[in-house]
Length: 401
Figure 1 (cartoon, rainbow, N blue to C red):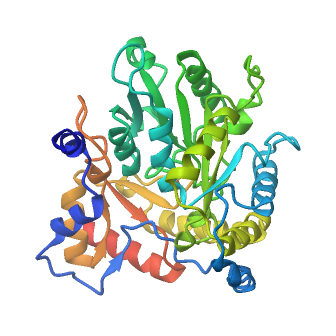
Figure 2: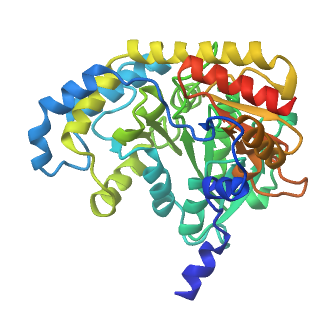
């Protein structure tokens, strides 16, 4: 028991209780508005309700861990359309699995794919810094050493994995990578992804690609890891997706965070192992949820409408903030990553003067030899309706002066 407790002693505290502690005792200066949490507030498609009602009797059945053929075919079709994959590039029966939102699967993949030892040493799991806190929890649960690789403005908020020491890469079991990135909105182009996949194959680690924001972008659709794989030499195994698994969700794309529905796809051998693991140790997706999710993946129109709403809010942010606070248009996702000098002080000031709750970037990051890469920043979620978002941004700007 002591060993387990010690292992999780390094677990990062959740950002949101930290934020509540930071603001405790401070009276908000206006009607409170939460722009700290990335919970989409756009209406979700009406057909979701219709599908859930039409299949409600299926709540009385145990669902298979592999989901349904209709779900897997819908996902394969969407992957083909969204990332311009050839027909048949992804086998729905062996290379796609439904997951209960991506967080549980992003966590569980580390338990499966990170060995007890690599290169004769404790494995390392590489994590961009700032990062989604689930990645660190997964590394610790797997008995690996989480190593935080800085994603700063100097490198376009994209970690330099190729520049890491060879002995670290040799014992790396997994690299978690999010594109579009949370929180900075940075997008890796296809050349970056191809180099990262090549690095994964050379050093024998798994690339876990978190692509949950890939359908929310400003101008150019972000590249995907599966399409990058198809532009590289096919490995000896014959599997074009070797060493790569991508994760996607309806939470952001379809404004369905409460549906808890997503999927993973990629490396066939590992996906079959993950299927076996999940059949024993992971929750299934209910059949009505799979039916609603299949309808969502089959429909691109609502995703385009959703994306347009976010683009309009980024337009408003550019108009309201201008060149203040290091504003830039995020290439993907729905967060602003604003340089305010001291994220914690700014969060307190914005709450006290404007009643807007934002998240200090420090709470999404870990210290490294150059300091904390998120310390100067705040993350602002553009998830509310247009008028509410504009009001919040004006309050934020006025509070900071």
